[in-house]
Image 1 (cartoon, rainbow, N blue to C red):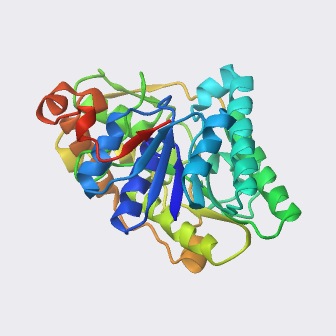
Image 2: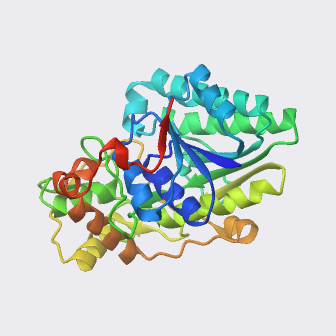
Image 3: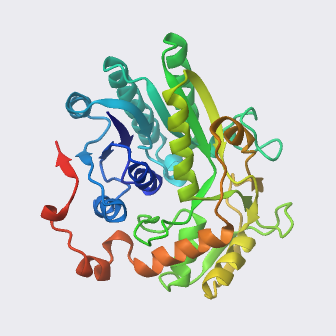
Amino acid sequence: MAILITGGAGYIGSHTCVELLSAGSEIVVLDNFLNSKPQVLKRITEITGCSFRFYNVDLLDEIRLEKVFLENEIKAVIHFAGLKAVGESVSNPTLYYHNNLMSTLILCKLMKKYNVKKLVFSSSATVYGSPERLPISEDSPLGAKNPYGRSKHMIEEILNDLYLSDNHWSISILRYFNPVGAHESGLLGEDPNGMPNNLMPYISQVAIGKLKELKVYGNGYPTFDGTGVRDYIHVVDLAFGHLKALERVTYSTGVEVYNLGTGKGNSVLELISAFEKATGKNIPYKIVDPRPGDVSACYANPEKAKKNLGWIAKKSLEEMCRDTWRWQINNPDGFESKDYAHSHSFSSEDFLFRNKV
């Protein structure tokens, strides 16, 4: 029996696929490539040497999604798929509410139909909004400040109601903080479309010369150096968190929420300094006006995940920077990098997975 990974070609999804395959799990990967690239699938097989079944399907397409359940024995689902850009969600909220909520409702409908009631859901620390206290624990008040975060909060409420209607469901909701880094092989990493929305890929693109300088949004926050503080977590640590949550849902029922973070906050200037130290590259930056809605500090209390899942973040800030830089220099144009494509065959005959539907 297999684990269905929705959005499995995405940044966090692909790293989780690697760790699942490396652990001997059978997986079925689903993605529509809206926020990802087909080349990711080849990279996963290169790292692991494992085959897997892939479906190019949008979760909103119920008919094609049902074929995935008909053709595979699915025992659990890890649900990553969804739109994720905060700024875009503000400018086009109906798109985010329709896509993120409806896709999850369709997925849960089919899971119920085929008696697949074990789910790990990819939520976000954005559901907390402006934290009233630090570090943030799972029982902190919720108050998302944008449609993206609110869509995650709404899905959490849907999943709670789903369990109340049928207590055979077992659901882990993972609220993770600021994923950064890349696989140590340099084959997988964050490949944003257009201008990076997140800090680490922005820094690495400045380091490699694709961007002139980094914009630091505000230096007047009530933090030790005036810049915003966030909880940066290595994407591989995050992937292992999903494996631990998957273990938990296989032998329990109910709905549990877990923060996945390091429990430590680093400022923007600290991250710049750590990147410079780890790579030897100078990162020019300019202080600009703060962005509306940005909070001064946000970092997790991860004790519940440690106690209940046996999970802790292990990788250091230096490793996050070093792995990001390895990914960037090996893939200057992301998964479309010509040097990599030239030296690695991407013909369909070489794929170890099966592209279905």
